[in-house]
Length: 433
Ligand SMILES: [Zn+2]
Image 1 (cartoon, protein in one colour):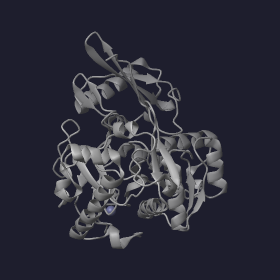
Image 2 (cartoon, helix red, strand yellow):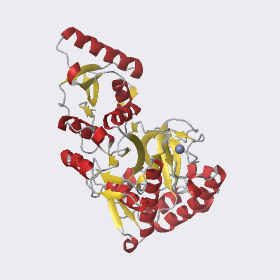
Image 3 (cartoon, rainbow, N blue to C red):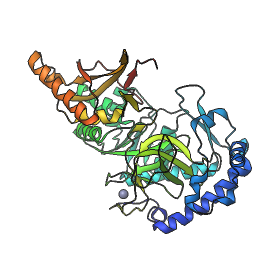
Image 4 (cartoon, rainbow, N blue to C red):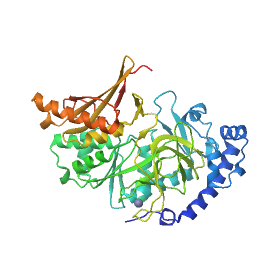
């Protein structure tokens, strides 16, 4: 197995922590000096950067939230003058103004290195032809993977999002070996191939680098079988740098976080308390080397856990589990916390369920209701009422036993749920709360 940066990626734990502490102190000095928001916040709490003498002291510092970025829109969180910024991206805002992030020349170099690391970990090298099916634009996904691929020396096809039949044609003609997209778009591509009568085995595709949305292990198996590839996961968010914060090695037992550039903490999303290693909670990230847009204790809203156990690949960086969803996406149904990815895991384990589903939450009187609409495969869309009833009973029982929440399951016709070209939207919440 190849490792892009063995000097860092395989560093002994004590050395990683020493490096993190030195870089953290430099970052805190930089933000205290250059970012008004941080200076004011630290002053309010009576903290100066010198108070942080160990990594444990990090927990004394305030969090940074998406709201802070909005309040400082567009350039208030930048730690360098605009003339030193060479690239500007923005993160998709579902409500209100998007957030703006910036990169110096050195930030771009670091970003490409981080992407090279996880692409190498997924088995990509200079012989590969990488097709990027993320949208090019303000979103960081496409550009991150693009420059990372070039740094590795792979051949990049900057295809962009959508236009599925053309994606498939290019895949065939240009002999693409690595696909970059959201996992839900990979399923869309697989389906279209089946419809077009293209046999995935006739292609040269061997690996998928998927990110941008939470997805389950069951969905991984589905993609691997249908496209005949190795499907890997990677993680990042624009506010922190973009893709490249973490990525999976071929052991596929969590994504290694580049700890020489970020410190990861897991907190209780309700109280903000730091949780012990192994706990499930919200991921909080602190950047250690970013010049233009440093982030101290940024609340990602992504729910995961960290694993410090040794990995067979030789990397020593901590691994984060696949994200279960965002703390904002968590549905509270009849008082029970439910993540859409948990439902996905249940559905995928049942034969006949397609990876297309929609959750509809409503409130009847004072009671929450959950309806799960699932698409079934053509051959299982049985006409016999009795068999259909038995199938529905099976799914409802399984959901109830795993989630502890009753749901009404409805079968819908094949291809009736809208297909994703980017992130899939799975939840319709009709409750007026
Ligand atoms: Zn590993």
